[in-house]
Image 1 (cartoon, rainbow, N blue to C red):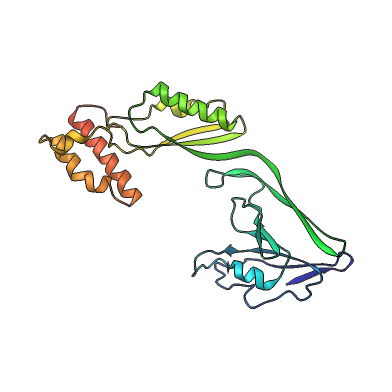
Image 2: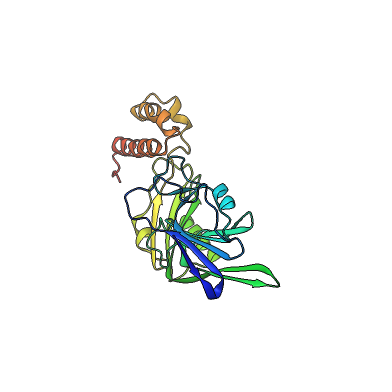
Length: 259
């Protein structure tokens, strides 16, 4: 539909998403009715998403053809940057308040100022933060042999450099190759580092210092050789399941507690 503001020479085009799916590209083969007006579009859209998207697929080529001046899109909770396409600008504003780690950054809104100056259209855009919390996920590579205190120092340094504080919910993903006996200490997860929330996920692989397993004829070597193809799989879930199995097997054989 189209809504006109006659005293502002502004026309707003938009649509809502009220069904379980919307496979139609609502901008395809359409043009603005009056290019002399300030034309804005507000809609739920999967911009340049999957070809068979069922949540209103729209292409940047359609934006150029449609001819609006600004496109305000919804459906992605994560805010996007202001992006130029042809003579127009588009953006996803994101959520006013982020709700989890799948919704990173600092929530807010987009402020758009469109006006005619000297006979030409001028559009100014800026992000306006509203949120009281921001969610971030960071990765720290601990390849090799790191003590708990060294890992703690790496985390503290990152937090200081990024200026994360009491308004930040931070998730740390530990990555890299480590000793098979490595495990994340539980008190790391309860230490908030002065943050609103902190947790840590172990995404390391137990492959550091394992060269001897290739020729080890013991049960430990046999377990390693059996799981090695899966540890090097291109499938992430398969790699992490194999890593968990290797750690559990070695811990059991060495009479260590299985985490």
